[in-house]
Length: 376
Image (cartoon, rainbow, N blue to C red; front, side, top):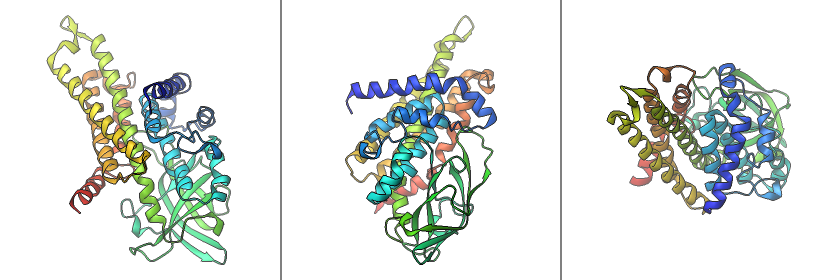
C-alpha cells in the first residue's frame, strides 16, 4: 500500500468517525447499545467488505488497508472497531475463503453492503480455548443437517442475520471432528439468548446464539465435512491481525488523549509534560505503540502475500494487545483523578483495552502458538 493510498483511507475513516461515531460514544456505551444503523453507512464507504473482491460487492483492499481502517475506527471508539473487525475478518472472510461460488454469490454481496452485520460462532460456555470439545452438534439427515447447541460471546448474535457456525460432526476430542455452516436468522430454532453486560466494548453487541433442532440444507455447509476446525484456525490467523490493529488503535487513542492533556494540565506553574515522570511514561507509550504497529504491519504484509504468518500474527496480537493495556493504564495515570471519571476519555480506553488480551485467543494461547512455531 502506497503512502498516498493509506492517507486517503485513514482520512476517510477519520472523517466518518468525526461525523458518525464521536458524538455518540458515551451514549452508546452507557446504554450498551449497538448502533446497527451504522453498518449501512460503513457499507457506503466500503468498510463492510474490505477484503472482498469487487465481483461480490467488496472493496478489494488488502490487509494493510484493513489494518489502517480498524486502527482509525478504534481510535475513535474501540467498540465500533471491534464490530467492523469481527464482521470483516470472521464471518465475511470465512465465507469468502471457504465458500463455493454459489455460496459467495448468495451471501457476500449482502454482507459487503453493510445491510447486516455478520456473526461467527465458535466459542461455547465450557469450551473457550478447548474448541475440539465443543458440545454443539450437527447431525446429517438426508440432504440436510440438524444443529443443536449454544454458542456464547458471539459478536452480533442478536443483530446479525448471517452467521457462520462451527459445529461438531464427529466425536469429542478427535481430529477433524467439526464442520462449518452458514445459518440465517429466521431459520426455525435459531435464536439469540443472553446479551452480556460487559466491562468495556459495550457498544459492540455480544450475546449467546441458540440452536434448537435447526434444520439447514447441505448447501449451507462450507467446505468438506470435518474441516471446520482447520478453517477456523486459518480464519483466526487473520483475526489476530484484526485484534492487533484494534489494539494499536486503542493505544494510539489513549496516548493522544494523554499527550494532549499533559500539555493542557498545569501543576507548580508548568505543564505536567515537563515533569520527567510524565515524560518517561509518554516515551514508553510512544515507543511501544510504534513497535506494536510494526509487528502488525509485518503480519499483514505476509497475509497479503499469502505466506504463512501464524507466528507473526500471534506475536502481533500478543504484543499489541498487552501494549494497549499498558498504554491505557499509563494514560489514566497521567489524567490522575480526572482519568477515573467519565468526563474524560481515559477511563473508556482503559475499560475497552482489556478485551484485546482475551478475545480471539488469550495471551496465554498466543504464547503457546509462538512457542510451538519456534520450537517445532
